Length: 106
Length: 121
Image (cartoon, rainbow over all chains, first blue to last red; front, top):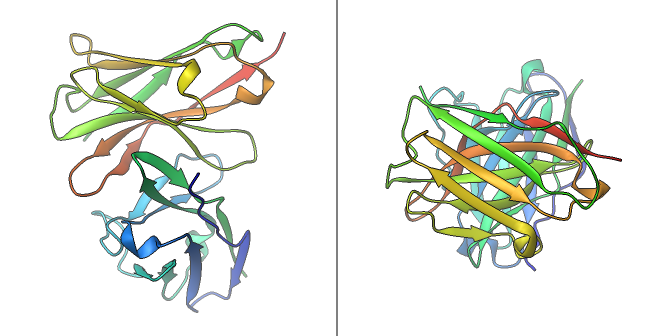
């Protein structure tokens, strides 16, 4: 079965740029979404179709996808961005989630 | 604004069937532009897709759960439902329902608040 791999944790200082990666075989052949989940809350879509932001998602969130790796980039990271982030793609009509990355802002 | 709300028993015994319903407000489950999904998250762990259903009742499921999953849609009540049979403690999780935008790509947005289902005797 298809697998998406994320680093378990990423740390960033406030105001700096955070990059969270998601790796999978021939991932650039697929559309990747990213979800943010804060403690005790439901996931929220932050990026879809590689690079698009839903209404209400700040411009500091951006996405890219090249080769076997998709990347969620948060520019000018704020304390409120501290959360778990999950990548997701479709393979053979099956939705696959990465294992999640805990972003710590310190 | 579309909202989804999960409901169902919070405690299910091993070997029994878990049953949940998602009520949709601010939108219609009959829309041809969307599918409707179930996703779960065991305590302290990541997300696992269970399956999608669309207004005609067609479904597609996670192969690892397919044999135990039944999904249905009730357009008159604007609801869709999940049944998971022969549950074990490994099925303990927060269960979310979500809308799925469909087209050249699919994404889950928005999500319900989630409901914790514990499997225990």
